[in-house]
Amino acid sequence: MWGNLVFLAIGLGAAPACINWDLIARRTGDLNALILAAVLQVLGILLPVLVLSMAGRYYPTMPAKMMGKMTLSYGVAQIIGPALTGMIGAQFGSYNAGLYVAASVMVLGTGLLFGLKAVERRDVRCVAG
Image (cartoon, rainbow, N blue to C red; front, side, top):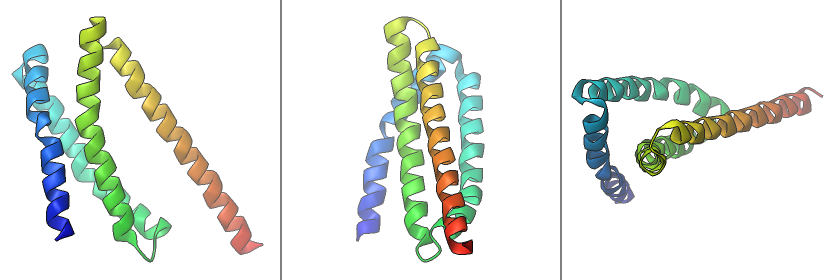
């Protein structure tokens, strides 16, 4: 039962993406929007390869839990990112501010990964020591 509700919630959350992609296509051209969508799709296809291996390492007893969290995070970012960038672009007349926000989020994410790496090193020392 919960699985159906999750897909319903994700579907409802994804619905505004049609409007956003229409706006992107109007601003960048149909082909450029399709190219961008295709590149994002390639990244989306490859993401489970990375996540599956990480899920097994970091959550060996419950890898599906991490997969669910990663899938939800990825989906939310795909919905919010373009919408936020579009609103910022409309407000400031260029996409520069939106790109700065996106880069800042990536820097934050990278910092969190460095933190995870430090935790991993600590755990290895505790097991070895």
